[in-house]
Length: 182
Ligand SMILES: Cc1cc2nc3c(=O)[nH]c(=O)nc-3n(C[C@H](O)[C@H](O)[C@H](O)COP(=O)(O)O)c2cc1C
Image: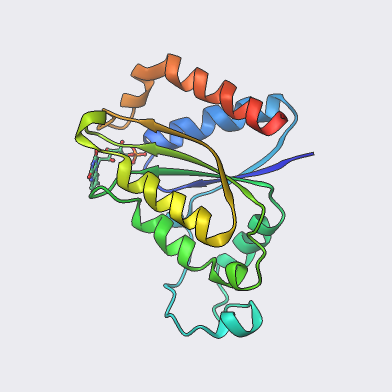
């Protein structure tokens, strides 16, 4: 049975949170094991770049990343949900990703499947979500994960603008279910 971990890159009860709730509900209905974390609401120290983890695959900091790392290790699918910020992914997610270096060093990310969902306020032709998606793509590539699905939601500025795209949301959820169930 596939295990799915959803990582939410926004702290507010906004578009990413709305999307997460709908995906979680749909996956649970399929009896797929799913867990969610919001790194921005957790205690996570910034990576100092000491590189100790390159030696032993363990971070010296003992904070909420200890449990997060266990969850990542035991999940086959990682769904990253991020708002676009200055054409990049959210800072909360970047901090989380940096702290996954122990798993990169011990090659425990290899073979995992990454699903990238990016939300931005601008129009598609204004490249609102490209930078965040590219960043998640290169994170997957460099760590040996495979990006198996991605979707961009544009023109979402206010908290719940994404609800104007119900049809796209439903399509996305169906596609994610298909990817996970094979
Ligand atoms: C600091 C900051 C920078 C942002 N930069 C961009 C941007 O470069 N491009 C864009 O399309 N939207 C940008 N946005 C808008 C958010 O991506 C948008 O409001 C998104 O829906 C937020 O997701 P959330 O509701 O899940 O927090 C920015 C928002 C903030 C707070």
